[in-house]
Amino acid sequence: MVEVLDLIQLGLFLAIILLLTKPVGLYFKKVLNQSDHTFLDRVLKPVERTIYRLCKIEGEEQDWKEYLACILGFSIVSVLFTVLLLSLQYYLPFNPQKLAALSWDLNLHTSVSFMTNTNWQNYSGESTMSYFSQMAALAVQNFASAAVGIAAAAALVRGIARKQKKTLGNFWVDVVRITLYFLLPVSILASAFFLWEGVPQNLNAYVQAETLEGAIQTLPQGPIASQEAIKLLGTNGGGFFNANSSHPYENPTPLSNFLQYILIFLISASLIYYYGKTIGDTKHSWCILVSLLGVYVVGVLLCAYFEVHGNPELLKMGLTGGNWEGKEQRFGLFSSALFACTTTVTSCGAVNCMHDSFIPLGGFIPLLNMQLSETIIGGVGAGLYSVLVFILLSIFIAGLIIGRTPEYLGKKIEAFDIKMILLANLSYVLLVLIFTSWACVSAWGLKGLGNSGPHGFTEILYAYSSCAANNGSAFAGLSGNTIPYNVTMTIAMFLGRFLFMAPVIALAGSFVEKKIHPQSAGSFPVASVVFISLLLGVILLLGALNFLPALTLGPIVEQFFLLRGELF
Image 1 (tube, one colour):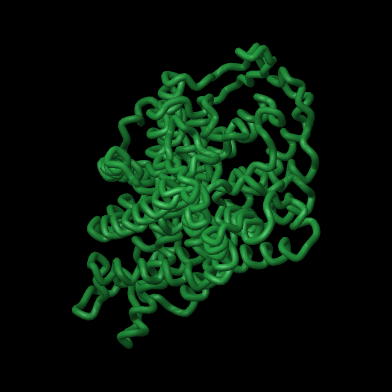
Image 2 (image 1 turned 135 degrees about the vertical axis):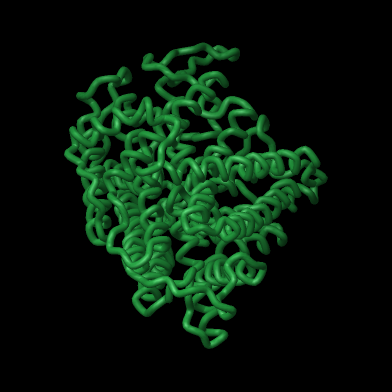
């Protein structure tokens, strides 16, 4: 059973997040509003001006079409830049192991993966990527993709908060300020903490060591601490090593493990408060955050219950103690379930255990977390604009029920807005189900499976759910480094990012031009139990209805087989 110390750990984590949410949210408001001053201005303002001068950024505000064009242009250039570096990896510096360039399909998959903040890895980092590739290609994209997500969220917030205007801010200014004033400073602090905990940070060649049994073992080295910080803070998730945060070099102690939870949640939770402060209704933002945290806690407890309870077949043999397969003993069962849920309610994708080894209904929870479209906390920026899309949909449904023109914060929700909301939501569902179906009936799809039956189906469903949600965590049983998988996953990641983000920016452009009508007795209360119930109902019902048939064919039916003693 879940122990008291486990609940204390969960409570302490939530308490720290709630304590940090307001000050970090207020700081974000200053960063995203150029007229406000931050405590780092004295040091960073000259650097910021120099960047604007060198890049010829004039700072004029943009309408939604210009803002979206900049996002797409920047993202495409990011992919081309990463593809070029990975293609020339063998000839570039800081490659003591003389690692060769990646194949074209893996190169494209990896470049799009890091650009879209997905960071799905069809490779082992320590045997594939040079130090230069890790730093100049992948770590740079960790910063860039996180900044783009936050900028997109800021554009939607401005669209909702402003009245009868045309512009949403300047994309280039937003990206520079987000990176310079937040991502870099916090990453430096986090890197220093990881160094203190024992995470390596060097450019040394790999070391040959003799084990106690007399075998020779290769110990990889590299600039690990710096990439570890931004992979978590930016909810990127791509590990320096194949084992990710279960590797002792990436996550050496229980304290470093606890900090990883905080870094993963920090930005997404704080942006919700930033939103409330910007619209002048922090009660509304607290309602959103607390309700989402409630769903997260339920998921953690359910996932932990199945893992702590263990495999029914082993219980019949008198072997109690929980399901330890694929987990690190130094973290324990509850911390493994907590990490699995933390990384899948956000778009992080980092793992400290192997989800493929979970009890079927234990693995069901992380899978469902991703299929709720990044609304439960979500990734940096993406989480905020995803939940705002669902809020608008909830308000629209409430308006239909009571026969009143739906309004949100005094702005009417009109036909164009609903079209953009439905486009964003349906795109994710279609991407997951179409690619999963294709892989399940194709020889190339079945060839990559590590397991048969419903567990094998779950491996495919999990892969495309993760890619389209830009999460990046893997079920770990699927061999995805083939041309068909690399290409289809690349398409799912790219479309999953921009078929959701583009309607969001268009939605921001629609809202920024609207009039704000005064609140009346008939206005829907957005800081109430009714609002929370409606929002959570819409999120959970849509997730359940869209994916329930697929989930039934995967983890749900596998649990019934397990109870009958049949394994896959």
